[in-house]
Length: 326
Image (tube, rainbow, N blue to C red; front, top):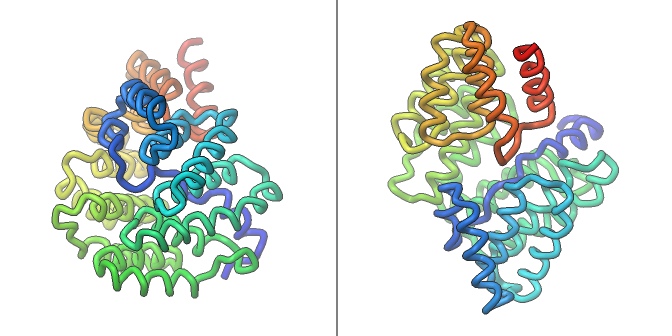
C-alpha cells in the first residue's frame, strides 16, 4: 500500500464523476442535448417533484456543467432523491458522484470529510441493485485509492471483485483489470480487458470502454506505445460509435512526437464525440505543425466546452491562445 499522504492525495484524483446508472434521460445526455434534458426534467418535476430519474438526471446535468458553485445544490437534489426514494440505487449513486466531485475540488483536509459518505453512498447503491455496475466501479476505485483508516484497501477491492464475478463474470474480469493496473501489472490488465466481450450489453459495454481507455492511457504514460496502439485499435474496432479509440490512437502518436500523424485521429474523435480534451489535443498538434488559424480555433473550442478542461490544460490553452494571437 502507498503511504497515507499519497493515498489522501490520490483520493482527490478519483475518477468518481460519471453519469449514474441508466435512466430514461441518459440517451439525451449522451447526445449532449442538454437544453432538451433540462426542459424535460423541469416538466416532469413540476408534476412529480420526487421523480427519481429526473432528480438523478438533474444532478448529472450539474456535474456536466462543472460549476463548483452548484455542487451544494446538486447534493441537496441527490439527498431529496434518497429521502423520497430510499430504495432507489441510482439516487444513492448520484449522491456518491456529487460528493466525489466535491472531494476532488476541496483541499485534502476538507476532502477527508467526504470520504465516508462517498463510500456509504456507493455501497448502498450496490446493495440495492447488485447489477448497478457503474456504482460497483466507483466503489472499486474508492477501495483502490482511499486509505484503510477511512474504509479503503486492496483486500476490500478484491472482495468486491469476487462478489462482482458472481453477478457478472465479464464485469468482474474488467474490475480485475483495474486492480491489475493499480498493481502495475500492465500486461495482465491489457490481456484481461481485451478478452472481454460485452455481447451487446450496453451497461457492460460502458464499463468495457472505460477500462480499455484506462489501460490504454496508462500504457501511454508508461511509454508502452505498441501495446497502447493495440488496445486503442481494438477499442476503435469494437466500439466505432465511441471516440475513445480514435482519441487514444491520436494521443499515442502525439506523445511520440508524431504530431502530423495524430491529427486525423483527433479529427475523427471529434466527429464522433466533440469534447474539450479532443479539441485541445488537436490544437496542440496543429500548433506544432504550423496550422496557426486551425490551432486558434480549436484552443478556443476547448476552453468553451462542457465538461470543461482540467485546470492545468485550460491554463495552457489560454496561454497558447495569447501566444498565437500576439
